[in-house]
Image 1 (cartoon, helix red, strand yellow):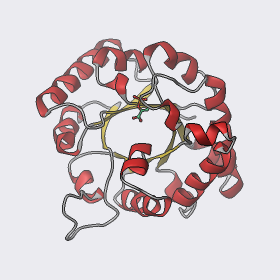
Image 2 (cartoon, protein in one colour):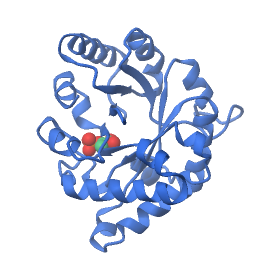
Image 3 (cartoon, rainbow, N blue to C red):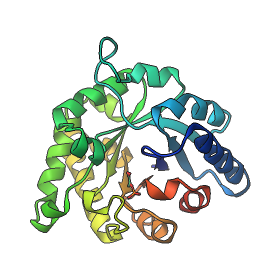
Length: 250
Ligand code: PEP
């Protein structure tokens, strides 16, 4: 059975001190109130990853992740961070293909396929993001866009590698806008993605893969979204920056 994963993407927010204070609060609150029915992933900026990993190391249900990584292993790539470095800092997850990386840093599906390889080669779990723009949804092209993003980024992987992949469906029009997809809209896409995986891989892999929803998930809409049978967790932006709202979602 799939275990839900609630991941908090801090984006480029929080100084070091602010970040550690947030983690302290989350750890403290999860001790008292959290039943452990979902996995929790904290995804701070790179320079906080090592410290956050150490802070959550003793907690079986909370892990750390990174927001991006290089497709290269090492070398003269100024400003880049490799998957191996992330692993050595104690993180377990890496987000690949967030729409902000696709949009502002021109990351293409083929680059993302090689970043996914780097993540998996280093024994980390990849959270692969996909999602259509408002224009694409209004033109009814969203299924085609999603098929292209998912197949070009992931369908070169072996069945075994797929065990370490999580997919996050994040409609671009819902990210940071306060306008979430309805539970029905999200569920429809999650079923579509699961079926794509079933067609190319096996029914077992498609049943086991965790497909998160992301896009303005908040305490007041999380329950309805997460109650959908094919929504296996959330990738949370804005609402993960405060311990109480993140904890309510968890
Ligand atoms: C995100 O950054 O992945 C995201 C979904 O952001 P928000 O929750 O703020 O829409």
